[in-house]
Image (tube, rainbow over all chains, first blue to last red; front, top):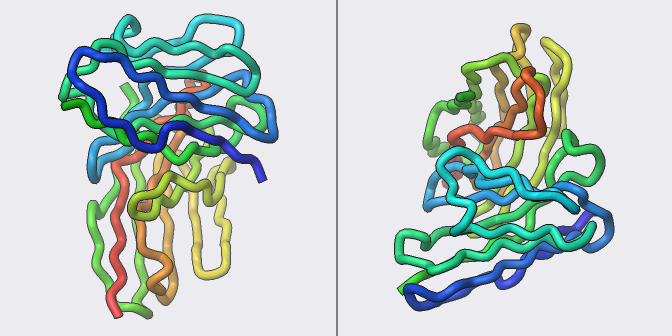
Length: 116
Length: 112
């Protein structure tokens, strides 16, 4: 079945530094990928839609200059949390539809970010 | 904007009991999907419903899409400890776009 690989699974960084999270579709091409954020015991909140070859579409309230998204190829999207602060600590998870953008999503394993 | 609510938020059952989670959208949906997230894991796709009034079954799981395409339910018959996790519905607004809005989730705990 379709596999989405996300790396790293866990990262601890100091306040003010930047962290890059990679999301790869291993056995299919993804022109669109979705980045979600999940707080403990809460739902998944869509942050942005990553589009291969064009700019990402950010949801209302998400700072595009803070959460940089680059969809470098049909199998790779990256999320960079710039100048991280403790309030950015969260579970970040990417996903990709295996067919059309409306098809079911396959999720990466997620990245647990802790900013100290 | 679109809101998708689920009830209950939490459910504790004894193994063998049935379980139901209800999903309600503030807007009409083009389709609805259900996902399961185990503790510490990532969401895993279970099923997609598209048609008004559609009912689908997967072994002990029964999924239903409301006639108005604004609500859905997931029913598990005779729960097992392997059913533990959080169940999310997720829907797309008929207004178009690829955005999938996740419900608030129902956390299921199954006790022996």
